Image: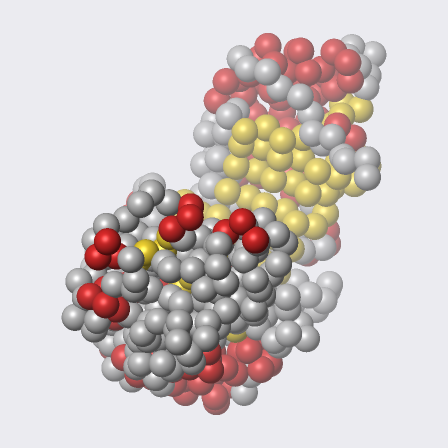
Length: 510
């Protein structure tokens, strides 16, 4: 069983006794009689109990569960004899007769030298494996498989781990148990290779993640991800605290290939530390919404990390110099470039232009690169974009986009593969969509939200794209009936041109 499977939660209840509905908290012990207070995390599900002892580092292989409940009258005496095997614990009244040598507890199975189960899973305890013991009838201490303890700490099992850090006041999700975290830091920090931290919106959780990072001094991490399930999280942590913890990993890992540090206070000096120690191995860097990084900081990464294949950043970090650095002869072919174009305050952000020559150099060097742009702007802020040919392949507009902007896309985005428009307004987009269908020969996916297209214009668009339009998601409210087609006719016409059954999306009525 993987380490992740041992995170069962410490407040679960044992199974019912023969369907009687009685549910009681099990009392578990390891083979050295260390009691419940020493259990890291235990769980009980599908008639199986798992966990491990913090005191002796033993896994609960054969677990003895004491339930404060009596057996039904038809089961037998209050203290029945059990037959132990490597697969189950059976009540004699409910199983086939066993050899006479097994008429009582099998001491060989309880002995510390007992051979381990053939499979890496805990011995199952059916719901009737419960009793109320007296001193005379209590069996020997729990047998714990030494082999399981060894397997539990095999380095290969600890190469990948996700730390979940949540506060009860801000999240209903459970956190990784603090004792398990300490076990990993003490015994498996040097085995970790693929590590991620998933935190909620609280500053306490983000600070806890930084505390763990600062202790990974003997690590060999290859993949690091910092994930905030809700903002602000890491952005509320002291910049000095965050950078100090992050540079510990940058300095000690030496083989980082993938880093996702979006929405964090990472800065230029910490990126220089990253480059100094991991320039030969870094292949993926996602750092959108990192306000303390400058264009010079990201340019330093592109200049020295020649193996970089995927990059995600905000538009204000994009520059002609960066595109030329990614296009140098020493640099490998770029595969994925994601650019987030975001404006929080309309009219207060000035957007620069990128020269066509810089885009051309990138495409000449990396002809198969996917360039993805996410726009979260207001209509009046689109003026500088797509004035010249731009090799973007995927476009997503999260806010309203003007008709003129969509018109420029049809003229200057010949590599476009996917287009998603969440909102536009009340002006029909027939001409703009038809122009996109004419000029964007690679277009295979289209999504339309709060905008308007006449049924005739939409059918003409689909007819021009034909079967290459493999994904088409359009809300029913987008389509405006005209003199040629109504909503009852449009699905059959569109289906005919696509070569498959198609219906517009409908807004749920609840």
